[in-house]
Amino acid sequence: MRVPALKGICLYLPAFRIEKGLIASQYMQRARGTRTFRWFDEDECTMAIEASMGVVEGTGVDTIGCVIYAAEKGPYRRKSTASVIADVLGLSTDTLTVDITGSERVSAEGLLVAKRICEATGQEVLVTGGFCEHGEPGSDEDIHGGDAGWAMVVGEGGGIVLEEFWVARANVFVKWERGEDTYFLPDGFTVPFELLPTAAAILNRAIEKSGASKVVIGTSSNRLPSQLKRKLGDRNITLFHHDSTTTGVLGSASLPFAMADAVEKCEPGESIVMLAPGDGALAITAKSSDPDNVKIVRINAENPVVFDLYGLYRKIVTYSFEEADTSPIAYWRDAQRIFQLRGGKCGNCGKVFYPYSDLCPSCGFTPVRETVPLSREGRVFTYTTDHITPSPIGKVTHAVVELEGGGRIFVQMTDSLEEMVEIGAPVKLVIRRIHSGGGIENYGWKARMVK
Ligand SMILES: [Zn+2]
Image (tube, rainbow, N blue to C red):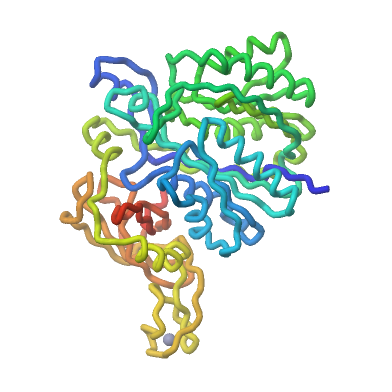
């Protein structure tokens, strides 16, 4: 009998925040706190990738047999986002990739599917997602939304053991449209009529069955947790939910953020209920067996760059790349070489180089047959700033990065407004949007400074 458990959580926030009040004041409204916002080359997919790379850092990907992308939406209408993530992580082509979309409880659904796959196969499963919300200028989404990515690893041995689940469907339509739909429950919105009794009934049942003393609620609503707390009567329960004051509302990403807080305060042997409302509610009960062994990684949680220019913020989040000359075929041809970041290794002199060619650039040996995965960390070898390449901030810095363990790569720098790049400075490679073309999003490697 296999015992699937939560073994790691990585939470990614973009490096940038803006005062909600600054956005609201443009539209004669008021708001408190800050929200996170994505850089112009980020989206749900790239934020999920950052979190995925964070959660496997140090442990590697050899044991991962499945990638689940679980988010309200993804970049493609008819292409799997999980496949892109599996490619970037360098997973083999027989890795199972699954996309789950829909309501705000999608992250819990992903966790549940991961538990079942681990039970059936013994494989480790990476569950990941991203959330971006901006909407029309002055809308609730614009003011109160937030952007984030997350990733969790489910596998055997220790951690937080995933036990049973309860689910009830209720058709909760907060806001639904065809096409560019959103599922959003910001402050001030009333919790939909059917949601509260459904969620409360399931939560009560899960607590009775498990004897849990901690409840993790994944919701965009700041009201729902207190409403649920009242429905629990005088039970001695500690509630965890993601406070959106500094990040903005994080939709389905709220659950992993709240879960990380709960795990950090968890004693061995304690039971936890994870509750995810959304078109009804889903509850998963878990028992903490070895909470100190759950790896928790937070990226950009501290020292954010706070914007004070509304116009520039709007320009960045609404920026659309110029249509570049590309095609799905070119993308397909290059995807593996680009995403997996493999370079050539000379059989004669041992030189590692990128991009791969069958002629060694150092000693001229041919044919070079061996390819090796390159490091995602390195140092700036040289750089230049270009004011012609289109960008919402008016310039693009290109750098040659000397990677640890060999190989030099020519990339754009990202995540900074100012000229912070210095020769010799440590950088990290990240997957970002490069341009759009032929109706597809093109992703590729860029570099950001290591703070
Ligand atoms: Zn050589």
